[in-house]
Length: 314
Image (cartoon, helix red, strand yellow):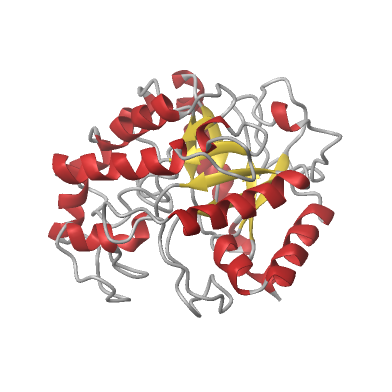
């Protein structure tokens, strides 16, 4: 059952607090998609994480279509997914087939793979839902597994399950200006290439794209005390993404700096003009929901003061 691998998302905006104030899932009629992040919207809404939709579609189109139908039938408004190579039989793939990255090796861009995402996004659009796309997965700096950017920064390419946290290559990825320049070219390829089915670039596809995460969990493989968490990398990349996003209705999200509450709120993000949304990730079990109460209020205050929006993403 592919649906069993979907992780629920809850979203809030500065005027709302959806976790502590439980309310029914919003339907498309309750919250028009162009008002999902509007402060005047009443009530909460929800979406799902499905990291490997493109790989699922490549392996089993029927399962892919059924998964989208079930997400739609459940009343979810948004799906979050990643641009990243899939990993067979990991906990979050449900044994989907391997799919290479849109860039492999570095500087070589794979149009057929990008067009696989075009197919996925078009099918989501047909169902009236929207998407948050993470443009890279920081966990691939040395966890699941070390990808091409991890290799470029000095890590052991393809080795899975390595202890990436705090390693020199992770620091190098975020601190090396040459690598940052290459990463910006990746972003340009993804956001500026015309998509045949969508009929436009992703940077202009406001009818299906709600937001872009700069990266999933940027700097998650750094130690929580590392000053790079509050460094210029995220704002630099967010600014580059903004330059490629034609529609003002497409937002730029942090993707949850540092992972699960490990530095999600950083001054560099709060003060960055190109960042619209501060995303947070927190992994608590169902018996520990009161922890959300204790952590959300101070976060909400900071986000409000910065004039940003808050998104509970994982």
